[in-house]
Image: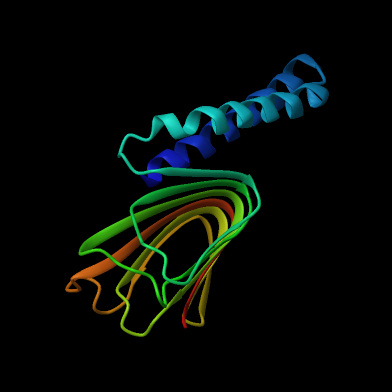
Length: 177
């Protein structure tokens, strides 16, 4: 779940740190080497990531760009992976199944905008490097930490959605529609 996003983030940071350390210790210039290697690693991750879903949820990978889910869309357990882009969820007319539906969202850089009706049961767990949340007008900034917030009736609701957001840089914004 959210730990896989942190593992990916950790591997990228260790990789970049190791090359920087090698540059300092051995006076080698890796700057021309790092960018192509990072692109190759991201490409390999994009190709093979959908095959690694251990929880059985469908995986939607978009390297650059955004996605918008609105209208009468059917809410199902899913994973969204994006390198750079935004996702907009409008749950106003969404069709919800019984029980809890978990949607995992993983970004390098991006924003998540969520619109919910007044009686909607929602929990949002956020983790990341440098990001902010805006929950119904209350804004908070975070640096390598996380937060979980939910609507008041979340625990007792028959139909509810839990969003798990992991991002390096971005914003998660929740508003009533």
